[in-house]
Image (tube, rainbow over all chains, first blue to last red; front, side, top):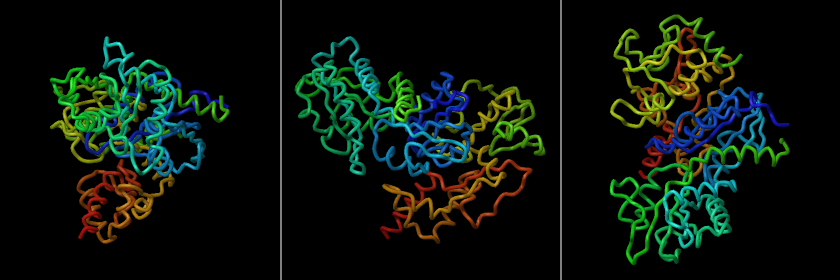
Length: 265
Length: 193
């Protein structure tokens, strides 16, 4: 049965960082936005690398029904291994003292995430018609979990099916196909790059532009869209997918998807 | 008992001054840095969660503070008067989980996790912490937890355990990620040597 809002809590589990404030910022923003909806008695945020920690946050939770949403885009190493281990999860539903923890999938995996990616791409393109533009989704990728890249491929396929862009491809920082080979991956003259990360940070501001050989990175005061590169290729660089203003709605959609999948609606 | 009710009742039976980490709570409730005076009219009234979160996440020089329990909270601000729910919420931002952990500890519901268990769980980058020599642990705890943090490391057995009900002690039931990061660096050095 669906629990009333007075008994439901939402726990957003993000990554965080020991070195910079930006990683955790979208999680705080999503939590603040979702508190305002009144759909949950309480919304808690917690992090792998900052406080509140995954290990201790449940001591604060007083509600009977706890939706635990990994505030991640990729469904890989962290969402399949680290979070279940640190929270002591035994499956989609776990009893913890007097609470029931309902482990949802990350927003990055929901079909509505494709809309958020497109939203970021269109913002970077401005007035530019996207019909002859390739959308290139750039994710982290890792050898530690073979599923990590899968989420980006799934979203790219959804966007490809809409036909809004001439093509939609995927490249990675730490696995093949590497973003450093983007010229071979994209055949159109113009492309819009959307970092498939939850927050802005080193990967989106530094690593991807550097690996692409772009002259300007998004923090550069001279940064403008598009950047024309060698051979006349024009690159529009978008904000990270997780910074899309609608991401809080994608999180809610994952909570609803959990209830539907487990016959709780 | 709800945690806000627990906090209210805990404060009521705790002698003044009420100090939690680097903040002081005055009846009413007013929250300021413990080295500031409540009557100081220069204190900046902080309203809104974003301004308060920024205050907690950055030191006076604008450097990021990943460890909330580390000394270095900015001075010169005030929050309040606050309801007990608002005070609880502010303490959550200042010292995450502190009230909940203290309530659990005093209610005998908090079991500290030894470092060996924490290290054994780690995979990936932090798996190497399993190789930190046992004799290295006290020195690392002294550096990271005793000198570098206001929380009491319950998980490190040689440390005395707090039993003073007159204080609002910040507790740490398990090595945090900042500690794991330091342990990883030290274990990697040992391994290379």
